[in-house]
Length: 51
Image 1 (cartoon, helix red, strand yellow):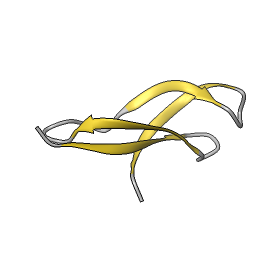
Image 2 (cartoon, rainbow, N blue to C red):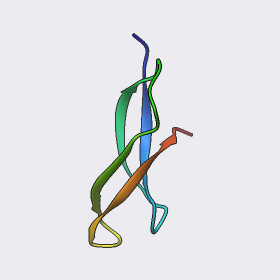
Image 3 (cartoon, helix red, strand yellow):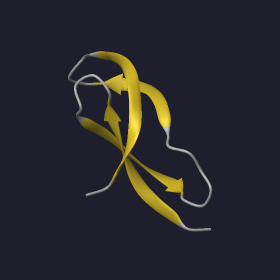
């Protein structure tokens, strides 16, 4: 199964805080609640592709 690294980007400040491997075949976009260092609180992080 192919895996690829994706970045998790904060929805409020748009900073990329986390990088995680993800299975690419037949999956939806990740959306997790993680800690944002710039906001200093837990916010929703959405998947963005690596650049």
